[in-house]
Structure formats: structure tokens, C-alpha cells
Amino acid sequence: MTTDPTQLRLPRGAHLTAAPTIGAVLLTASGLAAQQPTMQELLDRIDAQDKRIAAFEQHGGNTQGAAGSDYGVDYKGGYRIFDRNGPFQLRINGRMQFRYVGFDSDSGGMTSATPNDRNDFEIERGRLEFRGTFLDGDTHFYINLDADTDDNHHVIFHDFWVNHEFSEGFDLYVGKAFFPGSRDWLSGSTRTHLADRSMATTFFRPDRTLGIWAIGEPIEDVHYRVMIGNGFNTTDLESATSSGSQIDAKFAYAGSVWWDPLATYGKGYADLEQHEDLAVRIGATVTIAQEQDGQLPANQEADAIRLSDGSRLTSLMVESFDLKMGAFDAAMKYQGLSINSEMFWRELNSVSAPSMPTVPRSFYDWGGYVDVGYMLIPHKLEAVGRFSTVQGSIRDSHEYAGGFNWYVDGTHLNKLTCDASKLDGSPTSNSGPNYRVNDDGWLFRIQWQIAF
Image 1: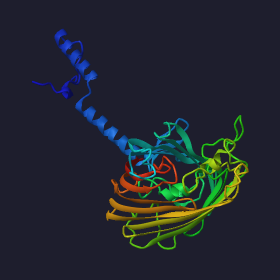
Image 2: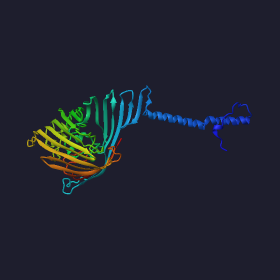
Image 3: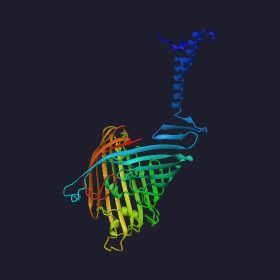
Image 4: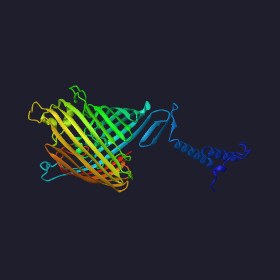
């Protein structure tokens, strides 16, 4: 017969001076009761634990710190650590774009003499982001660490800044970030319609730079972003080294404005919101930059400028030039349909190449892209097509692309993209969208974007 431990108790008035045998049994039973809790005690402990868990969840996971500060940890758009009694908040996000890339060069095309086909996997953007507030609720910080397997697996400070929001119409930033020169560029790489940006955007856009900028919405639905930076393309360049400077002594200036005149446009190009009312966005961007001492190695920022045949401007022994660029963008979303477009105009003038007097004094290029997407299954499956072109005095290039997006959870945080692009002589080279100068053939990409 199994003994019920709840019954192993000394009877009222019992004495340990009883007979030795009975005493030994009682002492043994008493020891067992001391070592093993009763069933009722176990049930009481479980009930108390359930109450503590419920109270913890009710307060968002908050606990009292050693100094009495009320802090918490939760997930809200990212993993958060926050102080409910002060301004400190830290949010951590991460993203990975795991991508297959294939390229099949055309027979008789520009790359056919020395075929450079591709068939490989890569992690294009492995990023860890830290953002939050400190000092007060209007003072923010942001740090973006980036590691690409096609960039020697190096981890770099991709973006970092501190900003203070004085008002809704004026938010002041200092640090390193996008130099505004294109809507497609400013929209970021998370919400692109295909696996990456268009050939035209890659050719014309600037890069990141250090500087000071402001963002705001001074009038309802009218936004702006203006910046003074070290240069048109000075990302990861040094302002001073033991051998001199990698950038010149002249600043670059850019300003962008955009307007959502109808319904709220939202973020990204796809109509994941399934707009019931027509949403429209139009905008324009102007960029001015003066470059001096363009001949390498004196000024590496000028080395990023390419002509319409893909050659670098510095290959012509150019020592100085001025860059002016304008862009106009228009986009719409309506019931799963989305159309996005941007046109670019770029002029390189006052070109000086004393050692090569036959070099033209100016170069003029233009181009743009149009992409169209339609949600075959609302919030889930989208078909996309794109055309982009670069037109110049030396050569014209085109890109024809198509593919689809599968939004696994209805957002860009878990998205599968498959696309194919026909290139007829790329004028640009960038590992992000996988373009290489003179590529003539088919580019295939399959990408899984996963983020938290």
C-alpha cells in the first residue's frame, strides 16, 4: 500500500519518549516530511509562481534595478531596453539578405571576349542596428554595423549619427549617412521592388558621406531633407592621413523635397497596405558638388564618377570638375497596384585635364527607371517588372527586369525575391545590386530577406 505523504504527521500530543521502535518509525517519517514537501505545499508554490509571472507580464517585463530605476525589456519593432523613469531607450534590429547570384554572358556581347559568368551564394547585407534616445526624449542616436561577404567579410560603421528633434518641421542631424541625391537611394535597400536598386539609380546616385543635415515636415504631407557633406561619394574615405587627404577641401550640397497630396503613401514601393484610395508621391532632388585634384591618389572621392561607357572620369587624368545633378520622381499606389519612377540629369562641367587637352570640357548624361508591381495575392504575392536606362554622349545602356516577391508574413521583414535582368552593357559597377562594368547578358538573383 502506498503511503500518503500528507498523512505522515505527528499526532496531536504524541511524545518522542515512546517505545524505541515506534520512536524510530516516527523519527524516520518526520525526516521524510522535512525533506519532501507535501502535495498541498507543491500546489501552493505553483500558484504563487503563476501569480508572479502574471504580474511580470502585466508590467511589460519591468523589474526594479539596484538603484530603484524602473527598466524593462521587450520586443516592439525590435528588441528594446528602456527606462520608464528616464529618457534612455535602446532598440536593436538585425537584417540579412542571403542571395544567390547567377550571370550568363551573351555570346557576341561586351563580356563575351572574356566571359565572367557567376554562380554563387552571398550575404549581401548582414546588418546590426542600434538606435534610441538619451539625455532627453528628443535626442536620438543611431549606429548601423554592416558586413558583406563580397567585401572581404569586413564589419564597418555604415551609418552613425546623433540628432535632436526641435520640432516636427526641423530635426537636426550630425554624423554619417546617405547623401541625398535620389529618391530611390533615400528609400533604402529594405523595401526595394526587386532584389536591389535599378541600374540607372546605381549609376547616378551618390553614396554616404559625413556632414550635417536636416529632415522635417514643415507643412502637412510636405517633407524635405537637406545636407552639407564632405563630398558626393566619400564613404569610408579618410579626411587626413599621414600621406595627405583622401578627400578634397570642398563641400557638396543636396536638397530633396517630396509631397503626398492624396492618401498616406506609406513606406516602400509595394502596395502592401492595399490602398482603397489613390496614394501619390512626387518629389525632386538637386545636387551640387565641386571636385578638385581629381587625379589619383590625391583625391579618391573623384574616382567614383563614371562616364556612360563605364570608364572612370579620373582615367582621363582630370584634375578638377563641377558636378550638377537633378532628379524628379513620381509614384502611386492603388488597390495592390504600384508604379514608381525617377528621372536623372547629370552634368559634369569645368572639366580640367591639363595633361590631356583633348578631353571635353563637359559631359552630359541622363537616364531613369520605371517599375510596376501588382499584388496577385493581397499582402502576400507580388509580380514586378522594371525598365531602366543610362543615356550619354559615349554610350547608351538598358536594363529589362522582372520577378516576384513573396511576403511570408505580409511585411518586408520576411521576404523572398526572385528576379531576372537583361543587361546590354552596364555602365556601372557595384557589388550591392551585382552590376559590373560592361556586363552584357542575363543576371539572375534569388534573395531571402529576414529581419527582426
